[in-house]
Image (tube, rainbow, N blue to C red; front, side):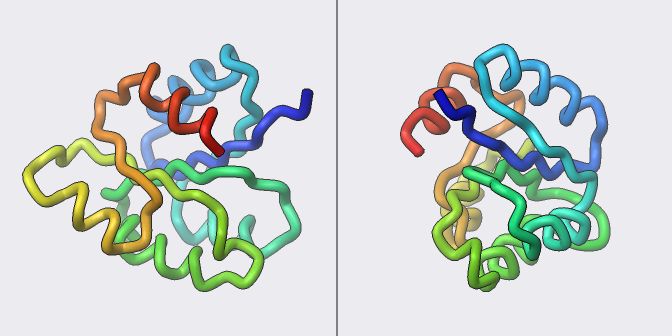
Length: 121
């Protein structure tokens, strides 16, 4: 069985650590980037990435700016992107989807829902 590769984009190392541990326990491979710029550099290569989890609130370039840039990369147009945000307020899900996200997860992340979403890709 080929493991799916998840690109985690989050400026908080604690979130990366927790998500990586959770996903590895569920047989996913993880690549971690601490900024959207770093992630875009990775995504411009031929690195295998099956799905992207991006924190929407980051310094320099947030998820709302990064998602359209990622979707504009020729080799990433079809890569699913799941927006992750602590700002679980009315309208946030729609705002994330308008930016180009495939779906939306609020923090703290519901691991069962995350695994369900990842199993569908």
